Length: 189
Image 1: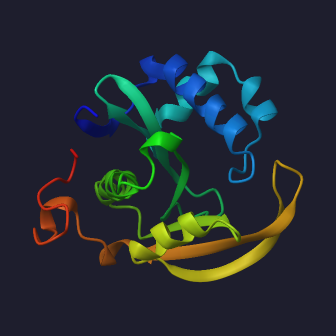
Image 2: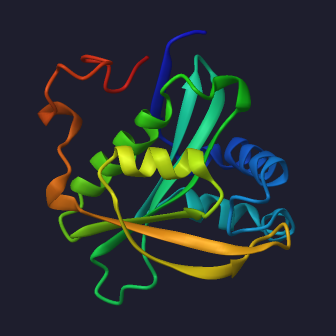
């Protein structure tokens, strides 16, 4: 494994992002809200607009030049005040799972959210049976706020569980104590 980094994607990288996102939707239809068929018909302009805007950003996780994961932060459309950020779209290739890389996904998104002072809280959700997501979410200090039934793109009805984190409770990577198990490795592993 080369040096693993996470960085904001640029709209010019839309084709690489599109291909990876479609691969993720096809590989794991049970964990995403968007279906493969819905994403497949998006135009290049829609893919570019998804990557970056004034109220959202998609990040890429790279092993050298190879894109191995994606994640995103958006302004929640459920909050008319625009003060709620929504974490979404996380996917890491199977061979890179289980080695602590989800920490980088959370840090990148939460650090980006902190640079946008209009955000006051962050929400995230997962499918009830997705224990890996539940553990990652709770490790970051998110607290459960509710659940609701949802029919997922794989056709199964199962609860979606919601969590919230007040942004004032999150320390940026440069503010975190360096006694963290990964030490000073806030962006590289």
